[in-house]
Image (cartoon, rainbow, N blue to C red; front, side, top):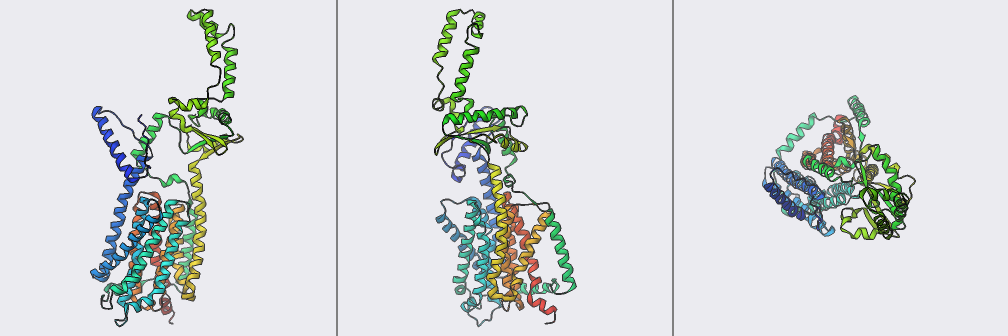
Length: 591
């Protein structure tokens, strides 16, 4: 075994590149000497490096995939290079501004932040596309600054609602998610400022021409189902409610943190093999033993081990590591010394029998007893910890903590069904606590899933109140498509056998921020009669699907769950928004 102690953080990309390169060279050198040798490598660094490599690949795929898709969409819509350059400008300023500001706010950036930030491309371009579409539809006599003053209220509302959706991530206790939320919110703000400050200068009234794609898209709306006070709408509502109830009843809940990791099979096999070869304990579950003194801690360890020994016989665990395995408490040492004196060193005892069998006389027996008596003082814990022998076991002894001392008793061969039994083994023992880091994090995930569910619900109320002063009685038409899309997303997750987790709920928060934008585009005064508003919605929806939808291809389970939810939810909002168009509904009533 070759233990390696890292001086740099295991999650540092620079450290990973240097260390993994050295490990590869060492493995190659070992196999050159012994071609049949098998080199088994494990540890945090190995898994972190593999995850980093995967994240870099996903960053390239999601980032470049989103950019290429958006460029193609804008070209099909405008048949001009200038709109592409303008939208790319807003995206570039948004990403660079978010990167710069985040670097000032945080001491380091997570690679996962950049992977998620790549999906920001799909949201940052919405403001530019909305301005450009309205510039095409506006009168040529209308100056771009005058157009901006007209568009500023809906642009500001779309920014606020989307930032609200992102900032829902900042309410979680996870630093990585908070960094993602800040990065994304800052990126949207910088992209919005680019549109507001630069586009009126760079886009004149004659810069863009009419868009054929808008006419084709509006023509397709003639076949779009519309909601109204009729029997067909009632039937659709009943079917939707039935599907939602059925899907919701099948939707499970799982907050197990183990479902959010996806290590490669080869790395996992090596880690398991290494654990078995070295007989290593489980790192995420252990007993924490505390006491007023080191002696008290050792005595409490020994009391705990008396309860663990029967569990070894029942094969619930295969063993345990404890400091008291090597240095018993002073009380135990004295008791064992007395036992040896009574049972081994007494006159006519085993020591005398042993001397007779090996051909020694009374002088040898007396010398042996004397040597034992001079070493009767208990062996001290500090002496053991200073010796080289203790090096593999020093991690078990935490030492002085606050006003007392603490240690760890690590268990081996643990299986998931045995967790409740091991937790119960600590019951009634003073200063002994079972620590299950995996279970604790899973509990936190469950608590925040429930908490964020309420945040999503109250956010709908807050967004409704924010939009009401501008849209009055039509406000519900802005919010309803997104709410129904979220319900449909949960139902579809249940039908497909998915289990609800925190990252699904966080995606629902973002669907609120993104989906309400489409309702705002269509409910603006005059937008219901303007085909350009429909085009702005479809371009925004498709670009969001290109960016966030690509997250569903991620091999990181958390990002994948987020991406799948965004893919379903955004598609549902896009399909539902035209059904709530006030103008279309009024036409069906003959108004």
